[in-house]
Length: 71
Image (cartoon, rainbow, N blue to C red):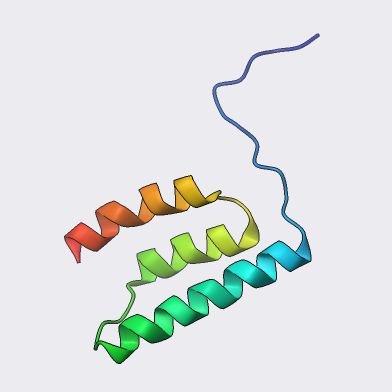
């Protein structure tokens, strides 16, 4: 029996995609540090979820935008 769900399961990403995401996040972190900005623990948590494949790019962006406006 198929049951409709209100949540979507994100497929796990492979190691290559996870590494690509980790490198992109590290680059961005370094870039903002160069400008004198540090990421908040909440932002780091969202980034970790993105690297782990829990969030796709749209979800990652949507989760970060409110954190950027409140910082």
